[in-house]
Length: 256
Image 1 (cartoon, helix red, strand yellow):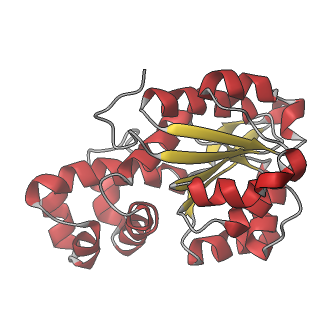
Image 2 (cartoon, helix red, strand yellow; image 1 turned 60 degrees about the horizontal axis):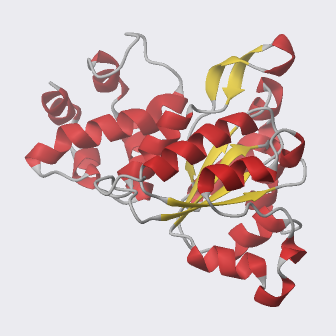
């Protein structure tokens, strides 16, 4: 039974799952979202079904998981799914789907639905380090961020084929925290403006005691940090926009 006190209670989450080994984490995320009271509608690419079957997501979400645009031609499926979503999430998001979203390509159910959707979009990238660091991928990520998309991760850690580096999908709990924060504050502020705060005043963030280890990690931690900072700011009645405009000394006073 879902929680009625969670910021996600009653929210309609469209979860897009693409073809990567991290697709198994989307199962955990689906369970966490439903436990938080959200209604989860899963859509999958055909490649994603090679890692996790649609029936698994149907069992976890209590709703059919769709894989093809033509599954319900009478209802114009991608339009119906897009209009019913309060927030859209792609996890894992491969380099391929990030490129398609950036370029406005709509050649499968996920990309067609997201091109139609007007709700906030959260993307959790997952790919090998070389693919993530490639200039083309970075340009696509910048393009999506400029249009208001929130990127959660990727983090550093073990990857497929025994490699290690940046490209690991953010943990389901961190993605959940980013979505839950939207129930309190606009998602754009949580995901983007806090990143700007970090860029403007990195010393204040690094000296704070809010994150371990002591050495500041890569940017994949920013959404989780954003949620912690929001909880810190709420008693003072401040918004993240006001927080961003403060001087570095003001930020240090808030943190301590």
